[in-house]
Length: 131
Image (cartoon, rainbow, N blue to C red; front, side, top):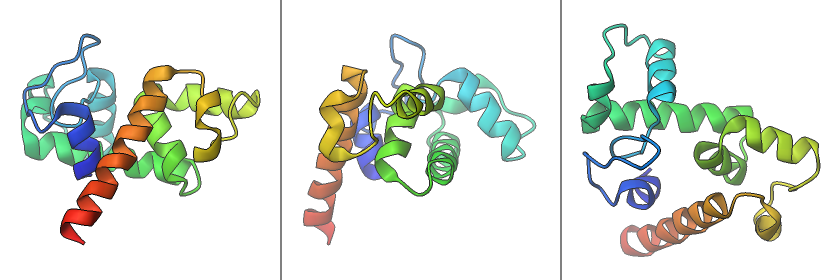
């Protein structure tokens, strides 16, 4: 999670992307509303995405949900987190991408390729630093 947060917002809880993603884990408003409803947060408001505890809770739940959806494959889950679950499913179905790190250059979204590379790099750095 730390590697995702570092990549998404550089630990800025008030980060706001040009596309409207918010907070530490850069959650899109629609995704935040949906994740909140799935996790029983009935009093959810968009401003809650700026609260680190809420943002990390929803982002962690969503990433875990994507990992379940994509059979435990971390690369696919990260691609879906950044590029959208529907896009990843379509890329796999149309054989545009096989979903493996070794084939990352064939992934259609350059931003998603870079996101995956950065998260994996940050993960390695954190493993090195903290064991």
